Length: 379
Image (cartoon, one colour):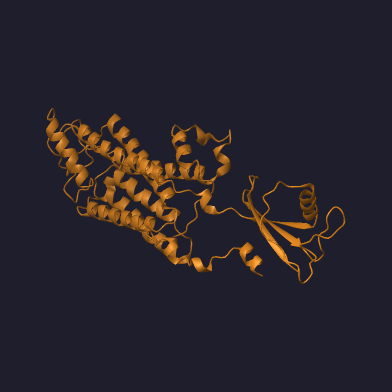
């Protein structure tokens, strides 16, 4: 008995998606007959007969058409569903990640410009003393507390950056982080401009005002950007960027991303607790240092956490995207969301991979790459 296998791979556009492989099995246990009832010469041969395997270039005759029709009747078809690869549902699209990064960098630089502008409007301490704050009434100021906040923030940023590098779908996660970061700093830029609060404590020393000195303002912007906006680097000597707290934004945002894109095993839960502790202590020490009003910290946490939850609810629930009853689609940045998440068709799994890997060609042996059809014919 001789058998030949033919593979036909077709893509199904049904609701579940996926590929189907059609396997054709030809049974030659009985000689194939022609429409005239005579056996085909290739099926019954004497020991001395020879078969010419050269292809015939002539036009198909009635005999050949009838033979093909009879051959199809003796074929069995088995349809094997093969699920579609998950990679096609989670495309990287690094160019979108680059656009999100530019968006975040643009808002960070624009925020430093706004801090320089608002600094000129901050009232003097002798004219407008600090506003009453209930937390300051019960907790005295700790001088070194704000340095602990900034150290904790740098640790969380470093941990998140390392974790992000080893994520398999780092392009999708990266553009989500950059987009939310840019949005939060844009909102912060608006709130600090529309309402300028006096300094929260009498210990604060603000840099002198420059008024119409444009060259000096540009120099301050560059100094603030180069120092990362941190007080421990000596780059942040201006006042006015109180509502809301940028340090609270980064402490909260990095922890939320660390928790969202990591496994839920016991070992990772211990890691989550450590990161939560660093974030909570950093936020608490902002208030203990009397560097921000309690209102600044509360508003920063609320806006950061709500924006994170809104975005990921829309991203993870596919049914909400096209639903007319989804009120989250009414937010003004929904079109940007649809642009970034248009081709992401499923929840991003928490899987890890090496940031740099050797090409797969290096591990392939071309001498061992046989298809099923070739192996069946060899038999």
